[in-house]
Length: 226
Image (cartoon, rainbow, N blue to C red; front, side):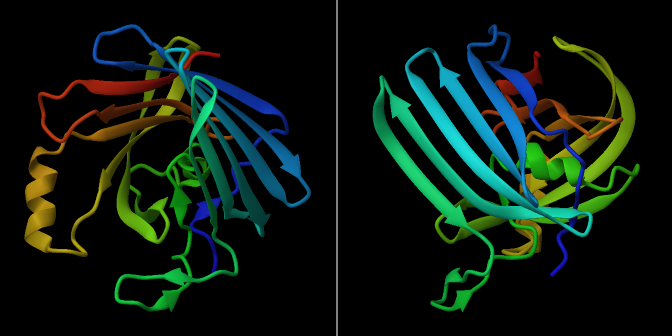
C-alpha cells in the first residue's frame, strides 16, 4: 500500500540539534538528529541527553519508494550513568504482529514510531486546512491514531533564527473507542502544536506539547537550536 507521507528530499548528512525545556525553565535536554542516505533509504540517528545522566540512542530506517517514504525499522536504547536501562526494536515491512483479540495482522499503512515523526511528518501535505490521520507506534503491538491538521502559514522566531513555517496541530484520536469520549477529551486536553519550515525539506522547527493531561500542567517545547 502507498505511504501517506511524501518524500521530503532530505539532504544526505543533514544534522539538526534541538533543545527541550519544560515551562519557563531553560533548556536542560538536548537532542541531535542526523539523517544519511543508504541506497533507497534514509537512516536516522537520534541521540538525547538528559541532565548528563540519562542518554538515549535511536536508529531508524525509512524506505524511499515512488516519491513516498515509510518506516522500515526502529531500534532504541536508553542508559543511566552508562548502564543499559531499556532496549526495543520494531520492524514494520513484510511482517505481522499480534493484535488485540488474538489475530495476526500487518502494521497499518504509514505506521509511525514516536521519534519517527521527526522524519515522517516532514512528508505531510502542507496545504492550509489539510487534515489527515496517522497511526503512531508506541511499543510491541500497540499503536494509536493521531489526527493532524495544517492550520496556517506563519513566521516563527527561535534560537536557530527566523523562519517561514507551517503551523500544524496534532492530537490523539479516541473516536475508534467512543465518539463522545473523543469529544470530551478534545475539550480539555491541551494541544500539540508543531512548526515545520515552509521551504526546502520541511525540517521541524518547534514542537510544543503538554507534559500532563490537564490545562495547568506546564508545557514542554522542543526547539531547533542549530
